[in-house]
Image 1 (cartoon, rainbow, N blue to C red):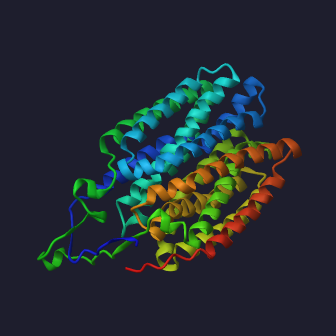
Image 2 (tube, rainbow, N blue to C red):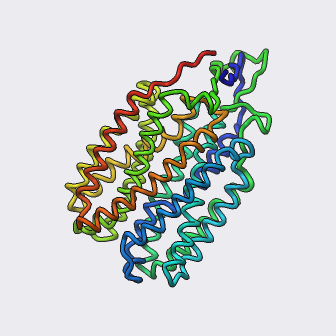
Image 3 (cartoon, one colour):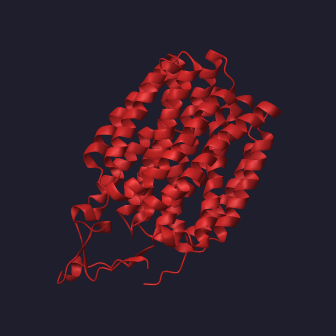
Length: 425
């Protein structure tokens, strides 16, 4: 039987709900962990490979192995998060992530790059991202979409600002100082807030989701619509639903396509004639446009449903990858970044985080994500590496970006047929 959270007969909103502290904490952590994601690694790829004479495939291999290590870590992290929460595992992981960037400033050999990138990517993708995407949905039901969108602004801001300041430091100094600064920013922005403020779920501190309290006899002015009963399925039940596999397949494909595209976007744009600084602004536009996309997701999903919103977004993303092949100037690059940022950085990134909670409930959310996350990390690792190999073989990104577009169309089809399970209360 699914776990049922009964509706609250009479509800009084607290003046301040601690869940919004969780949202702010997740936003700060998301901002800082963006240093370990593909937009920033894309900025570092060029100067590091140029200094040492390494190929793009060799550099990408370090990122790939680290991502695969994250897939292994995720097998255990999801269960730990459900039981104990992400407070201390996040604190330790963010500290070590910052350390990996600080130490990268001193590398002199390929094995050192591999050691630090494996550590950094394993922590980023195997622990930090997984813990952050579970944290906010556990604190909200009625306002889950809004809360996730607000928390996601931190990651969008990080993906906008971090590549810009990393590129700026590279321009005025070198890539070594840039990685050192990125590591310090991780420590300053996120380690202490996570250690002090992160909590597992509202019930642990005597609260209810969305800041509601069950209380008989409150005044009419204090009453709001009762929270609907939440049905939470166990992992054993979830794996029997076709929707789980359809959504999982769509997300696994997306985790190959988008990292593969973003990781190679800056080299692709420079190959097309844009200056490195212009390419970074395209990346920043992509990330900044995600804020508008998050708001759009919040408007569309309640009216046409998460399933249809995602399927439509995937369809337009496929067209966007075709558009990328025509980008050969800075204005077109900015237009493309705006278009894809709304779709990927906004709509997909927001709805991806709430889909499993909306379909299957809160109680086993960490376990559910822990099951699918390793496959997504393998796909995440494969995307940049496959694109690098395709480039080294063909001398261009045309073939791989075309394939990526076809895969995103497959995501649209899979999502459209992923109907939510019946909630029998």
